[in-house]
Length: 186
Image (tube, rainbow, N blue to C red; front, side, top):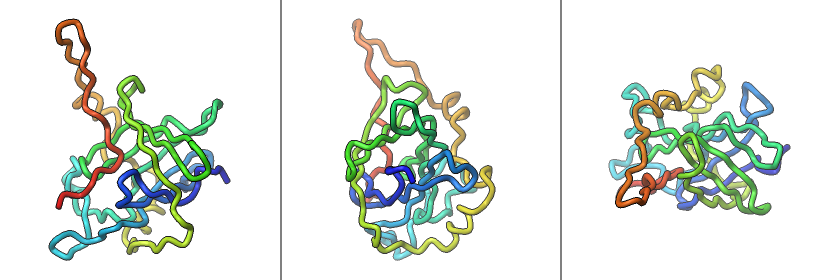
């Protein structure tokens, strides 16, 4: 098993993702949210993917949600060519992961090229971390690849959302940073 496989707290510490080989391809890595510090919203109901750009997916529970996929091993180490979904903004970004140490993982989110990327450090979570309730999502994770595809296809996101950098007095201003998982609103 690759050393990246396992449980990882995200950069905010409010969620944990289980990284494992994808069910449709043992040569790729995928990840689902398996633990949330706060599983329910203020209304007492389980958190849902309410910010998803696809209306049909806004009722999906956050717990069990696929947030990493299609990561391929790179010759120089690490994994790249995959996607990361940020339920806080409802968008999908290109993704790469690389171990910084046995207990630290660097997740890099980007759009097409890594020039304007944003990296986050995830910490290894204990193997006995209690899992949140994922009953509906577990069924989803076993569906064919097309059913567990990223919430927003990369090609569509690039056509609709990528903007050229602004040029201001000879300087290029980069786009805002790309979060992997943002904090939930109070």
